[in-house]
Amino acid sequence: MTADPGPDDADVEVGFDFDEVDFVTSDSHFGHVRISELARRPFDTVDEMDAELIRRWNETVPPDATVLHLGDLALGPIAESIARTTALNGRRLLVPGNHDRVSAATQTQRAIERFRPMYEEAGWTVLPELLHGTRRGRILLASHYPYRGDTQPEGRLVGHRPVDRGLPLIHGHIHAHDHGPDGHQFHVGVDAFDLHPVPFEVIDAWLEGL
Image (cartoon, rainbow, N blue to C red; front, side, top):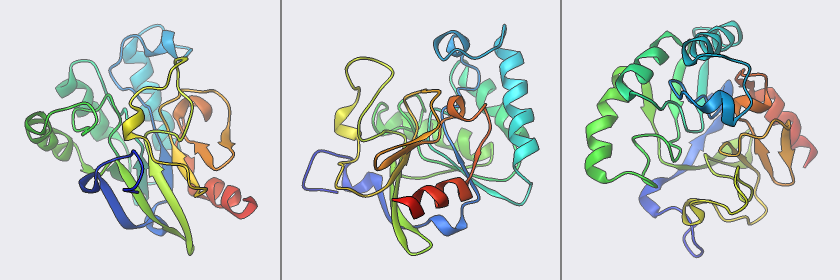
């Protein structure tokens, strides 16, 4: 992933074992006051939204499952927002998105070092911004960013997007309400899945069909 524009080598994890992951999701936006308006979520208050996100997560994810969250976990008063995620079931892995305080795409190294302990204390393992690994022997990539597409007419943070070489990619970022697949990329954001994490068997079926 180094010959073309994309994440720096330090922000890529090669050899990630997707077989250990049971669920995948992205773009929860805990604590984000305006996300219900921007993403057309059916809530009047951010507290109502956060409570429902937690409820739907925990009715889907058993305590012993592993969840891969592809970024934009929480906004707002970050200490308060991140603290709310301690109520979520499972072992929780975070690939940072542009709104996360541990994102190499948008934060200084000093800020990342400051905020990483906050995420870790809330139970999150912070991973690089691009994962390159295998699922049942097939190559798979994971990033907050898609190969293409955005919530705005012009794509943001193009230099931090993976390069489309025909490999399957799971991603978030776009807040689309469409379910999942678009060529070699698959959107796993909560807005496309009724605010629930996605069982990885859904991704498996997509990979089998490629």
